[in-house]
Length: 79
Picture 1 (spheres, one colour):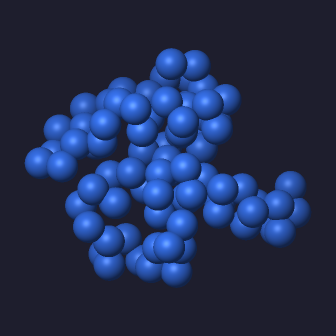
Picture 2 (cartoon, helix red, strand yellow):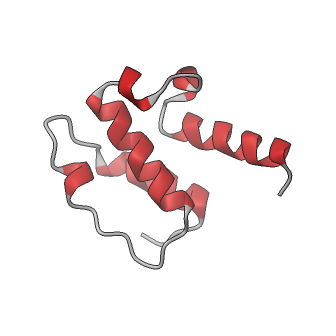
Picture 3 (tube, helix red, strand yellow):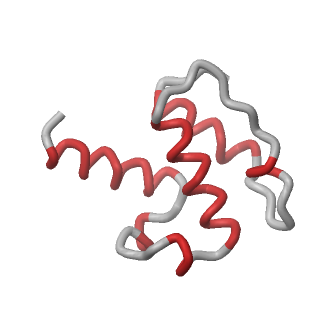
């Protein structure tokens, strides 16, 4: 992939988790829930064979399971 393609894919992925307006923000400038969504997104974009979901889902503001499915579908992972 060229750089423009990677940027476009990243923007699409941010939109899926509702962070498209936070594109230019650093993680320390995001809420805990936003950082969780970003972490989950980054992990799934690596297309791991298995993804253990413990810590990202245990915080005060949980990521709803309905938000995980679009990420999985976007990255081609199986749920």
